[in-house]
Image 1 (tube, rainbow, N blue to C red):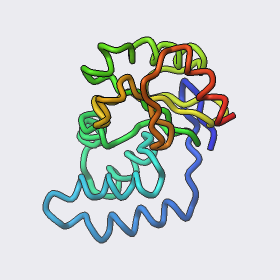
Image 2: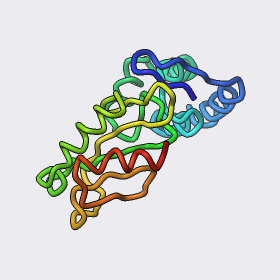
Image 3: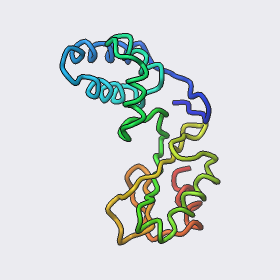
Length: 164
């Protein structure tokens, strides 16, 4: 998967398009079908680029603006692809008070990306979150679900090196 900061190139396959159209066909006449269709689309593609949102709009006659509004309102939907290594920094109160903001800024600096973005090589994506339920380990970051706690910004390079 290729990710770049501006204008992520869409690389959907014919198989993915067929799977999406089948899902839409099965769901579109059900009341409240937009969310399940969008969830299925994200399951198929991994995220909801404008090309996928447009397909949903074309197949359901739901205005693209409404689909985009739902995609940007709910945090479960991603408009950008995720990297091979998904880095998430807890910015909840306990973590933030103990320095997670500095950790997040260090990651931004080292990776050259910001919240919700993916490195050009597709290796890392960076997201903030509000609580991972590990307040006793604050501040916390996760890489693909692996929790790293009681961190300082100076610990970040060594953590990233494990995934290089």
